[in-house]
Image (cartoon, rainbow, N blue to C red; front, side, top):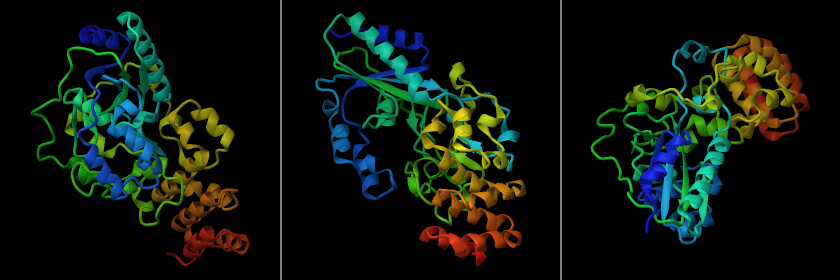
Length: 379
């Protein structure tokens, strides 16, 4: 006899999740499209997405959990209180995507899903096995969430709930229990002729609707990409230093989003959500950890955040950042030395030339030498 889906939904909402759906543990219907995306190299340097073992798990969820029958998919709102636009648009500040303002959602949701899985096991009184994922497993979770009725795919590839927008996290429990009363995909709602998300993207990261080329996405460039950011893309990243919200913020369905009720995801400290770039560029690794320990930024790390801040300072013409950028020419990291050189040349080419020449006489890294040569040439 199948376990009650109604009872499971009630408990899920009681634990604080905002959305819940139940669907059969079948392969994603978008699996072929995902493989084409990988074959075209649009995953960039995220090599783990193309690993054969992970592909096998996506094709058959039994590889993850033998005997799996059901997927429970949950959503947790992270939308923030509106009215911070003036702060976020300030070019002297580095902008952080709203999902990362609070504590790390992986930890918050995983603990709650483990609690739900334990309740499900005890309440059913049956021998079963479960697996919890929050943005970490080799499954196409947005596709499974769509199958479970949590929303529809937008042209920006985000999952959009017609009455909540797209500012919610997704997590899931895979279980060997059979659960009745499955949900169905939502029908008759979608983007229509709207292309606001495609039009707003500064880097043209959408080659066509419903397809994102991660290699051009500001979120990918500022978080997942670990090396040099392409020189042609640097001026297009604006003041974003971690992620990007542009294609979500312009979506008409976003007007229905509700501010999160989770205290751990709320944040109003300007230094945490949009730090002054001149201050950020002076920040050492210890100060970075003190400010962002336990948040999504901790996983990206101090070096990449400063790399991104170099670009944001140049894009915002933040002259107050020149002293810090000059000192970064002597940083231990070649990545920081190269991006600081690019930023200095854009900010104050004439005054920066002595420092750039001095560094060039001592620089041994070929990529940094290239950046210094181009900066001195005014490229």
